[in-house]
Length: 165
Image (tube, rainbow, N blue to C red; front, side, top):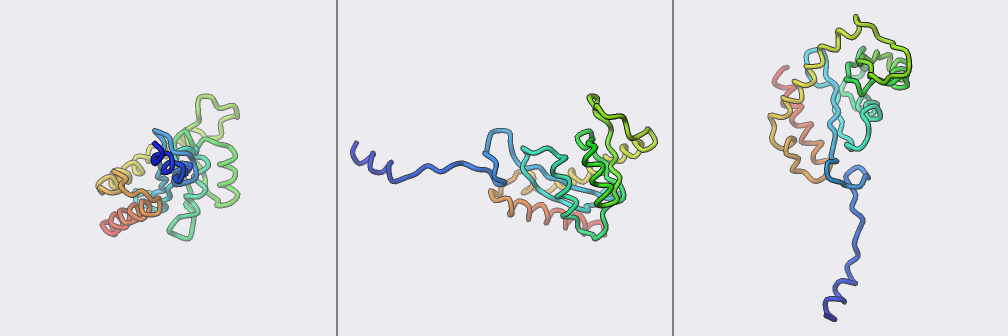
């Protein structure tokens, strides 16, 4: 009994934290944010904590792009329907954000059906994710460190790009 109490006092419990400074909880993980071109090939990739909303993460993804010029249009799902995000994209990058409006939108609609026809091309981004899922290490997330995981994602992206160039 005395030996057990001496051993337990020497070990201090430390706070559990995730890879991006957020507490680890069941169901939380890492989001893979990508931008693809019109043929479905990768333009930018970034990983962030899954706790944050996608509107806050898309800026860092554009900053991590491979090429010099930002894309002319970005097509996203309903999560990208944000007036401040749309205005900041227009001012900073000259990029048009195409996203269907949410049902609970309070502001007047800004996009008509002609612009939203381009939303049908979003399947090419989903195809990029299915190409990434052909590689075992990024899918199962064996790497504990976020940098190692991001490196494995980049290696998978390099293989995908080399296949099509």
